Image (cartoon, rainbow, N blue to C red; front, side, top):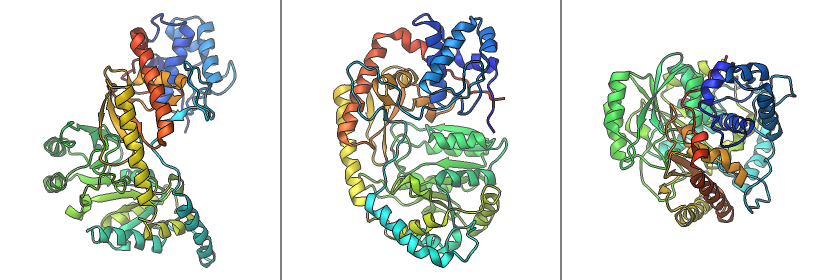
Length: 481
């Protein structure tokens, strides 16, 4: 349910925000906007009243009123003056005020790493699904496990990849995030620990927090990606109920775990009691043709998450869990407390897409390779001080910034026509201020516009160290009452 933020909690989050670099109301509005964009203040949360926040900050009420008015004008706060506005994200792009930068379609969104649908292939799958639908209409339409043809198609793909699987080992979900929520509800829950790579996928970190579990972060060394010794040590000493891992073109770094590392991780984790949960959503976006086996090929105890969101289209909202039959039964029981089944037409279409999985992939991978090369060249030319890790696959590049300014860059980037996800969104406790994830999901021409905007925003920060200090991310997490 929507909550509210009390004045004390908001003051903690704001930190030393008022340095005199700009009018106080504007500095206050900028930092609150940052906190909303970066997820530290959740959406649809009521901010403190103007009177109570003014008292907590020892400011005039006029200053707070002006800051809230600015947030309403930008679309980050709902409600009129005098009411407790609720946080939100603008439905339309804010006006662009960058120096001479024109972005005809509004702000370029680099906060998300997603692609449009694979065109005709998805369209045809839905058209064919409508032909199959009449045969299912006499039924109730509730199916907590998933349509059998889809589960069979998914099982066949795992078997072909070296992981023998039956339809009884597949649970169809409404996307990978839904799958993770089911798994967390079943295996972890309140106050239990979940091991995660650090950095990790932000929506997974959010799901872990929302479940009441406690994330146990294990750093990823730059050279090898995964520190298997540290992961196993954490499993033995911290005793997490499960580990959430992205070994295939890791989000956000684009790294891939070697078969040697996979084999050792599974072997060493076997006696710890920690269930390995593997997110394979991006596995098929293999740009360099790296050959690895699914983690489940090394142990039947591994739980795998997959979906069609990245390979075909996020709008399908079709994902799945692969596990042994006993665990699948437990997942089904947990799922029925959330919903009673996924939409039928989408599953009929998904069954056709899974059976012809590779049909759209060649063109999609070729497009992503062009985009990746374009982004890497543009960053090297226009932001040479950024150190960019070359991804082997996936959708994003992980960039190290010359200063700990990721949050500040995210705050001012919309003024230059770009929306970003700050590095701390991918970590815990304010980590990764030195990093920025940049997707290469846009075509080269739009990537050039985005990188030029990043260059100009970076230049503004470099020329205004006081601004960077003002917009430094708070380390505390929002307290919602």
